[in-house]
Length: 200
Image 1 (tube, rainbow, N blue to C red):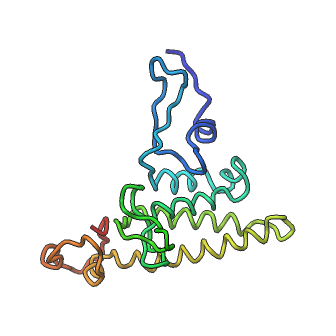
Image 2: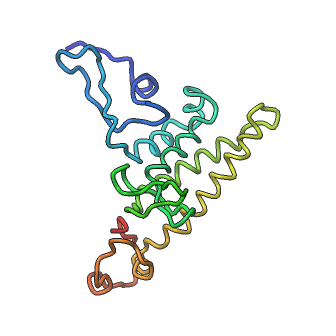
């Protein structure tokens, strides 16, 4: 009763961010605990990072956590959540439990590709591209930001190209691990062009 909090922005800045990423949840006000907030560090979730940065804005993330923090977050998410073939990113899955990420050779794994969450990642990249393009050539970070933009644009384009493979009419032509057997018989292809929710 009659309790107040420091607000959502304070929560995101001071409690939800852990080692360059947003945590997927936690417990507040646990009886007997010396801490008001106990984060759940596992599993890691892709969407709390992609939508968190999109909603708060990469400019705010960098202001809170240092120049390039939004960009570095994306690099970390790809390490455990990225789906691709070889060194080419196709998109993301749901969490670090999907069998995705980058192996010791620098190649992407193919656990599960989510259409929805890949679209969310594309949205985040577009917000970062829009922000980092505003950095002035006079800024001391300008050279680094140019490198950020090159990587972000490449990731955006590779995910846009790959997400088409998740369209119902093209999904059957790609050899996705875990694809249902007899897919074309299970889901007859009509005139509409919806997307399957996930690669398996």
